[in-house]
Image (cartoon, rainbow, N blue to C red; front, side, top):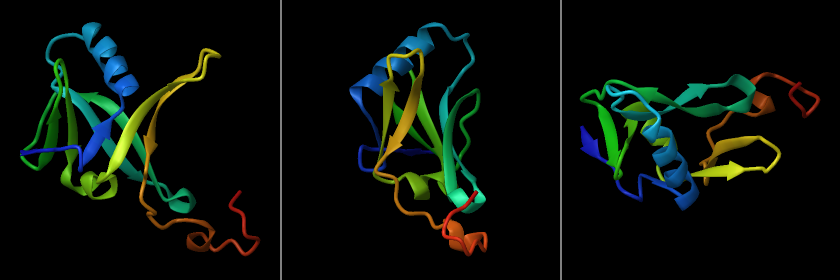
Length: 119
């Protein structure tokens, strides 16, 4: 287990506040929030977050007051320097967003589209 720093992954104040709120309602046994990457074909790599009950030897961990952010080695290579924010759009829709994502490939050339747009 490696300790992560701001240069690896950072959270805005809004994201930290929302995670504190979520962890006040969570059952015991949750080790943290796992950030993960999933290959996405034309759209490149997609990122998400889920609660996790395990921290593995190859995970990087970022400790905050009442929770931990957990990232495995293969995902961390995509996330170095990324900032996670929480955006409340005011219309009942809110979400975590990943800012400063590096280019990960993908795009229309990877699916063979000749029209210039993936549909």
